Image 1 (cartoon, helix red, strand yellow):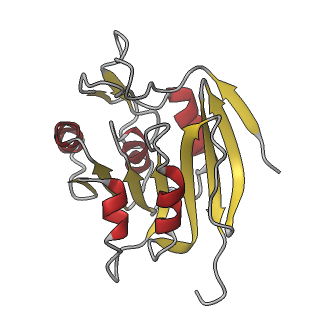
Image 2 (image 1 turned 135 degrees about the horizontal axis):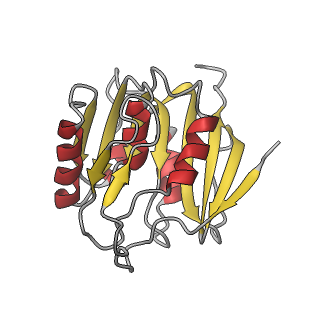
Length: 210
């Protein structure tokens, strides 16, 4: 049964400037709990709100330890960093903006998390289109594409091309008005609304040949 929660407005999108005082990211739980990390002053760059992250990782409490995480359209890397703090085995962050990617890499270094976390500067769709290597599959994916660019559906489709473990978790955040279309074998587990955005957590159902 799907449950919905409503919280204050989520992070702004590329058309907006970050508000004053939004230049810090706070890790909520786990090994790096209460650590404050700088956030680059870049248009639209703001961490996912604390309350949304807390709710999401409560849902993922048993799935995060040991997970292999993919954080697409990473931005500040708030979700991937939180996953590392809570025991994820590894996290790969994909971020198109080279300056933002460097800032995220600096924060991984600050946390002494470079052995488990890696940043790759590049386009998320192009990354997925290249296909995974034999050893590159993920059990937890965070997918938060820019709004109104029709990126959610193609990313979901490409994730099904060998990127996911049989019963992977996928968190997808989009504008609330979007009619989300995901692969038929993804089951909606929970959803949370924050301002003009809605986050949906899906559980992938293994295919017969997996």
